Length: 100
Image (cartoon, rainbow, N blue to C red):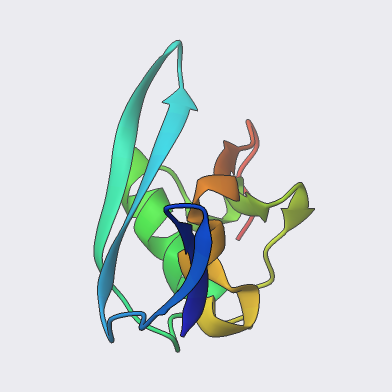
């Protein structure tokens, strides 16, 4: 459950078991929305990075995720990150040199 301010009053809402993540990604002088349609509470940072790298056509080692300015670890889950309520803070970064 997440608490949301609706009409100026806090209300509790249940997070659906599966939801879509949409993140604007700036890359190569342009940008696009990266959408991941089936995020669940157990979705890991690694799974998110894999999906982002596939969207961008880049090696996973060159893609990192940041949430609120801090790097997202591969083992962290969407639930641990409180990603549903913080999804607007998520950003994708692409390094020039690929690792892995």
